[in-house]
Image (tube, rainbow, N blue to C red):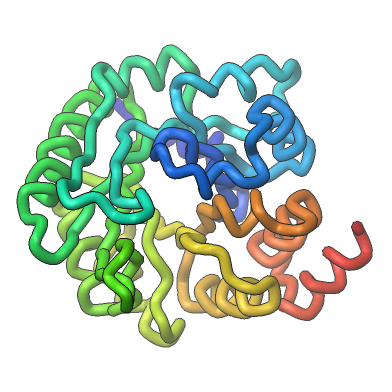
Length: 279
């Protein structure tokens, strides 16, 4: 089935998209809940700030979909859970696909579904599990014309060995993104590169599929805006930000600033002034 109708609900007319990820409760890491302890209030406030889409779990989708009217953000559904974010890190890593995820996403009126593709040193079994999950979800999503967003995560151990963190190695990111495309991804949720000048390598690996940059761990506001502007200029067609928005001092203002950068070509300086004006 054609995925275009659902993608058109997710992406604006300029072909770009800001997704706010609010699926962190799925990962069983207490620090991820900062700022979203009250899930109904968090979803309501984010919906009012009007990003293009909000990424939620099946169990919390109703918080968005119960909002009346056609102008609320589009729903994107998380299809799996993992323990890679647990602190301190677990020795045995897993990624578990939700049973019947594609059908459930359609029932909940999702515009797309998201699944991990994880590569962590010394954890080939986890990578193999992710490939099986991806293949199963690809087959199911194709039945319903449901766009499949794959989140390639190249991991490395932190300096002290206490947790997993995202790698910013463009070669490794590009290789995993390419594998995701080869497996049937319709769009990618990729980590940024350390140097935005390397990001076109990721876009090339995507072979024409839209690449959305994930926010990952929180960084300073000015650094976030500078990095985001550079990745957009380097070819990113969208953003999927969670903690950097949810744990910001002014989440709604940051959403508006990011939308201005993504859809209105605002500079980091203009975006920063926009946040200051709205607070």
